[in-house]
Amino acid sequence: MNSGNQEPDPIENASDRAAELFRRRFGDDPAVAHAPGRVNLIGEHVDYLDGIVLPMAIDRRAAVAIAPSRDGATTITAADLSLEYRADGPPSSSPEKSTDLRFANHVLGVIAASGGVDVPLSILVTSDVPPGAGVSSSAAIEVATGAALAACMGREHPDPLRLALDARQAEHDFVGTPCGIMDMLVSAAAEPGAALRIDCRDLGFRSIPLPHEDRLGFMLVDSGVTHRLSDGGYADRRAACERVVATLGHSLRDAEIEDLDRPDIDPVDRRRAKHVIEEIRRVDAAIDALLADDPDALGSILLEGHSSLRDLFEVSVPELDTIVESAASLLGDGCFGARMTGGGFGGSAIVLHEPDRLESVRDRIESDFSDRFGRRPESMIVRTSRGVLVKPRGRH
Ligand code: GLA
Image 1 (cartoon, rainbow, N blue to C red):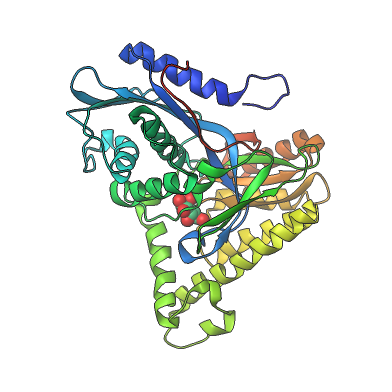
Image 2: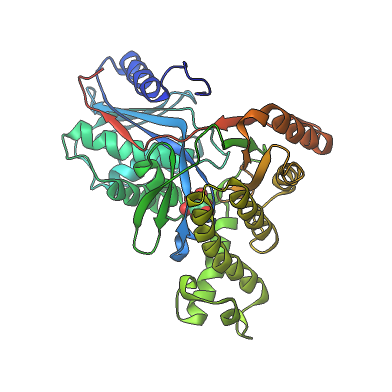
């Protein structure tokens, strides 16, 4: 983890490690790209509904190393999982069905989305973005795959939006998650020291500077409940909101809460849509708070967002609620606010804290959690990071 000033550069580390593992496995020199995971500050479950989101890239990265294969087969090695996918010929243009090898779909899906290639490839993936923690480990792999593939094939470096669109296509067609654009676009386009405002309607994006890290720190607390967004709850929420959009005849981005007050909208769907309308407004309010350099105001907005995800959108779990409640009990006492982050059904909460109160905040949150659930949760300090970076072949 990159928590001190003198620690090694995580960006160089990710790249060198992947190249070294690749050389050991394939005896060749790869093109390497590496891309970060993300934490969404605010704007949850609105990216697939024309909303605005405000994620930031974190200093945990996935690296993908690629070179043309020397043995006629396409191999995808998941170095951290000790798993390997292998098939004759160029990368398959259809998803891998066997459960053990499903990890390969994140890579195969991006290759297919980018137009495919007609030569067999050797590919190695390694990552320190924790899977299942709600910090977009998949998007990091997909974005890195797109960039490494272009570098390996001598194609022009794709712009961030292209990388993000191909990654999303891979999720939809190969992985089976009907996700939005947020995770991939921030992984492709983020700048350090800033969050990324993404308008998911016109796909415009721009950096919003965050307060200096001496004033505002970010701690991720993992609920330990592993989420799989392809399991159904995510698609179900999306379908509920899309029913409301169809009934209204226009986007929720343009809707008022009163518009939902009609008998042909199901009461559960109405709650889901109310969350979306209010959450989009919270993003604007959060940006105002950041521009006013007001972490207290930002923290309150995050707490409101959590309540809405818990009560209206119903994607939180008791473990996440407990983390957020204990953070809320520390307002004015080291903590600015907290919320679950990402798709939900488990994953992590993000806690905004005063950097010099970190230890007491962390201790309180972990011990409240352990009193209730009988185990201490994993927590990690995260800092902002830069979007995807590439090293062509021959540069290691
Ligand atoms: C997941 C999806 C994103 C987004 C969030 C919820 O992370 O991949 O596209 O919908 O859930 O905000």
